[in-house]
Length: 302
Image (cartoon, rainbow, N blue to C red):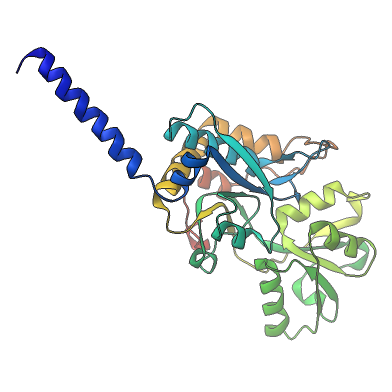
């Protein structure tokens, strides 16, 4: 075969492989490639994971992670430009909006558990939390049994309210369990005395206390209503190609010095818009998770 013939054949084979590669795109990658847009779901008050800053722009730890994933998707698809469409979600709408294709990534404080994996998938864990409750120090509530006969509040669609109801039944606490539409409404109920405690992930409680008018007036319980629970960036179920890109991007981030720096930026330093500091340094369990990323929903794995 002459050199010219060899070059022609090689070019045809190479072009053919690119055509096949393009034809093989499915799921979210195909959706993004065809539209030139990726839809990112965000929360408006899940500090410091995903919330609105002073300019009403979504920011946070999870948002920064999602932007790393969108950059990886752009590179994977060899796009010169990729529009990021920001879509507000709530605890109740995040899973339906992922399932119906409205959003492609959900960037917030969503617990990865076996029940949710029946509907959606998650990329590598970006945070580990536990369910506790916050209350006024003056109420002298610290242990779960201290909640007996009290009114507490949590968020519908969250794992926290399920754990609250289970504890109420199993311990015969006789609590009145209220449901708030979001963190802001729930916290207001504690501030104005309508609820004695807010049951939620401990780090979110820390952010609400730090953001409150009187941070020194509140406490987080020493008792937990759960084992360590992993937060993950939510992706569509049964879409291994897209999840592979997200997993590679998050693994690269978490195992690099940039991953630790990103954590410190949002959990140990003043954050916008008010300059509050959660003072929530990385513990040994979280450090281990960052060094060895996992998408497991099993608390025992952490």
